[in-house]
Image (cartoon, rainbow, N blue to C red; front, side, top):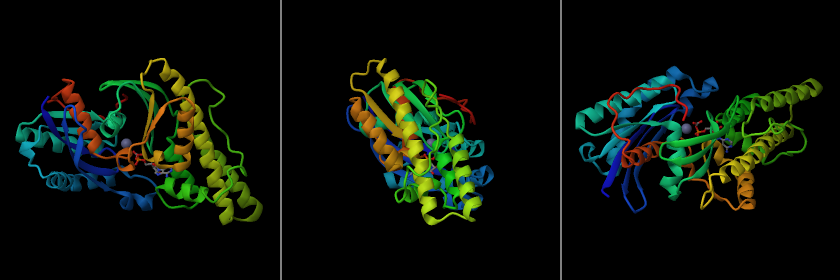
Amino acid sequence: MATLTFLGIESSCDDTAAAVVRHDDGTEPAILSSVVEGQTALHAAFGGVVPEIAARAHAERLDGCVEQALLQAGIRLCDIDGIAVTSGPGLIGGVLSGVMLAKGLAAGCGKPLLGINHLAGHALTPRLTDGLSFPYLMLLVSGGHCQFLVVQGVDRFDRLGGTIDDAPGEAFDKTAKLLALPQPGGPAVEAEAAKGDPARFAFPRPLLDRPGCDLSFSGLKTALLRARDALIAEKGGITVQDRRDLCAGFQAAVADVLAEKTRRALALYAQYGPAHPALAVAGGVAANAAIRAKLETVCATTGTRFIAPPLRLCTDNAAMIAWAGIERHRAGMGDVTDLVARPRWPL
Ligand code: KG4
Ligand code: ZN
């Protein structure tokens, strides 16, 4: 089959990204370029992503990112076979900027335009990085998402469960805020936790007493807040070691919950009869070494291959969008002329 080279565009949260991916059927796909311009510094003072600021930054930066991606790939727009853009779910201002730009480029050079669900982009990444075959189990754990998906095909995702409130990354970020650690909170909390005692505070393991694969993290955050306030009431503040122990206790609870729910998700996934069972993780929280180690143990005990794509492809990027475009194009799910931006779009 013919070689396909796609331009991908991503702007659904706080990363502006463009990438070029090439695939010759029968060979490994090649990421020719992947440009990601983060906005952490723009939102740092607000303790979270501010939609208006994000939208303006995407509108200002998208052009430059696309230009860079084409330049780094050494390809002209007219030599691209198609354009894939995240058309949801996400913050509507950013998604609209990406969709409008992609529409303009596709119309201008007469190329197919494909709208990609951001979550499908994450879910198909293990095929780009590790050539996984369907069906595989996907655990998406980021600042905005947390769900177990059985990926059965390019457009076939079975959701086994997910968070009923906060995403784990959000819980890490809120924990960091409560303990006056920098944002994004995940890496900061992990660094503190490494020096703490996970057994000192008995934090809850939410929803483990209920069957199924749903998760909850908001109660954990409340428990941490109570423990912190109890320390403050007792001695007027928290020490460096208190903070480390709080982080360690919190992280251990998140890791335990994710591990147990993964065990249950793997049991459900087994019913799909995979020839080569595999669990792939995606999202920023997958960078956490303690969580990763727990998931690896669960996989090892169940004969499941554990796949953690490189972090730059686990977090938001446009290579996964270009790749999802190639996959959909090859499956005949091509061109959409009436592409709309969708703030909500479950898989
Ligand atoms: O996938 P991602 O880059 O963006 C989206 O949320 O879409 O994930 C970012 C999230 C943040 O909440 C961040 O705190 C969390 O991933 N994160 C971590 C770690 N590194 C990033 N959480 C726990 N441990 C980490 N090492
Ligand atoms: Zn994402």
